[in-house]
Length: 135
Image (cartoon, rainbow, N blue to C red; front, side):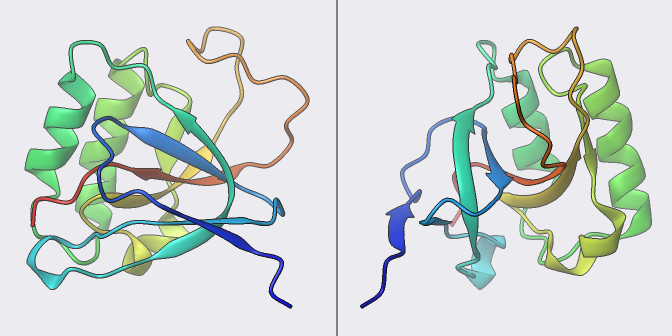
């Protein structure tokens, strides 16, 4: 018997973070723009506050139809993350650039007190930032 439960995120209308951890829940989304890839990861799901959708709009435009990131892409996104109070606790996971794409970014999580999201008791430092794919 398969104990894993699966959640489809195709209709996601905002930024979300999946904290990678054993949870028994697999999240999957369509990603990679026109490539329509379907990556998945086990973890815990939370929304990223982004009332003005500035972060969402930046990421949607910057990653449009990308199926993997370069170091230059990661540098640009990291600069944006650090300047945005909703994402300043995230950075692109440089070891997983080839697995990061439009609507599916592998990130490192740095829990900090000035984050707009309160994380208590978490030690996991890897996650996926996801949103609705353009295609």
